Length: 212
Image (cartoon, rainbow, N blue to C red; front, side):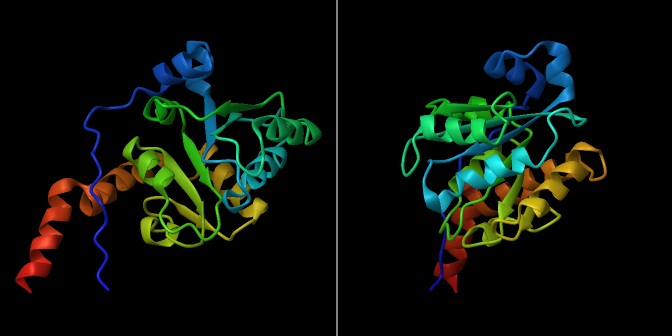
């Protein structure tokens, strides 16, 4: 069967990530400039593998440069927010990892995130990936399900094996240490989103099917 995705409202405004970090995470301007924000957005259910995110954070030394702050945004499912915070405490990352409930204004939170980790397994369609790419957030996703349809590894994001914490860490380190041209990745993500999900692109694909 031919699958045509629902269109996405493409954001045309440029993102001021420093300002967004100051507003959402209450960072000083100086810290906002020099701190990488790595985020998880999704429900706290087993399939989404939120514990992978905590383990990725725990794999970094807390005083390791460059500065990284970790945030989780989601709603209670198999794990409650309190349980997630307790696991982070047990992993000794609670000082660097903040856990938030689901946010209605999620677009504004994506503006404050530099890297999105999407560790879920068997996801049919990664809505969080689309939302992140729409805000020019770099996505590192598990190589599973619909993620493989959205991410061209190394071009508009990155794919890693499900649950491979060291592989996630390797990509994050290369990005934060400037070994990967992250501005190009961000732009490629935005471009691919337009090509696949912008309203006119979807309409053109539908018309092509009708004409064939």
